[in-house]
Image (cartoon, rainbow, N blue to C red; front, side, top):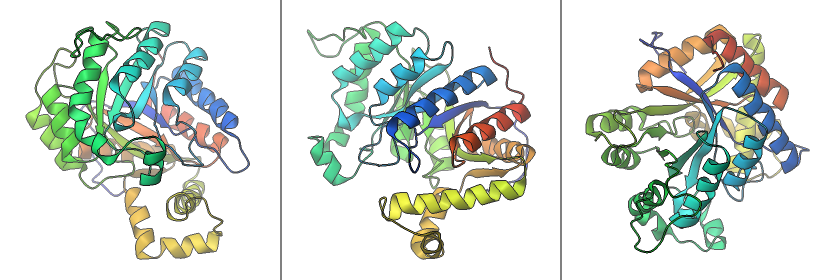
Length: 338
């Protein structure tokens, strides 16, 4: 990530997107145990929140049952905010999502967020297995408003209320990687989270559109932007770069071959191809190096993205390197637990 080195007027808040990665030789339970360790570190070190993303039919990602994972992690932490980043609403009817997150809010008051995405988070075959169809995404704006009505206790569906859910006022966030989400978040007066950690192309245009068109709401008086960014912090720059190479090879295996056996040499060949260039572009916004180098890169990125908060994707391979990266970032950012 090469950006002009500038310091934001005020440091952005730092949060974590945890994909509950299932590493080689690990089980989903191992991934859930690691997610608890990440959240406990985040709570101890002063990160703002930890979010989990809904993905389906992906062998390396364990957060498909997002609300269940949030419940598990919440039971093993005390204060930190936890949420979905996000629930892919076209996969669901609004009512059961309101009930799920209403339940979480009743069990863990003041700690639950609900980010909402328009993409299916899966391929067409998986969408059919979930009994959904592509047209589900066309109802996204209406479904967001219906969901919000259930959570605020002002249902838009006569005779239907969410129990639990009604009156919990779980805060909503619109997730996106295009102008569609930016315009919707602005029109509804909701915070906007941009997926720049894997879809960087429209970041600045989307954020500018959102801020320009934002309409204050009961939930949000002013625009609020969260931008995703990959982070690999290590004790040495050499080790951080070596980790980045490992991560890029893993991306090849995840996205190009869908988990097929690919050697390091084959992965490097793919990365050197036009197809590999697309994978590298997905990771355009990545802060890699020592703690000081990462902090400087994140400061520059926060200004570049005009972001109030950075959603860090700790990309280091292996849980020990993952936790070390988050510890180093907390040290250099002077985070303080509340």
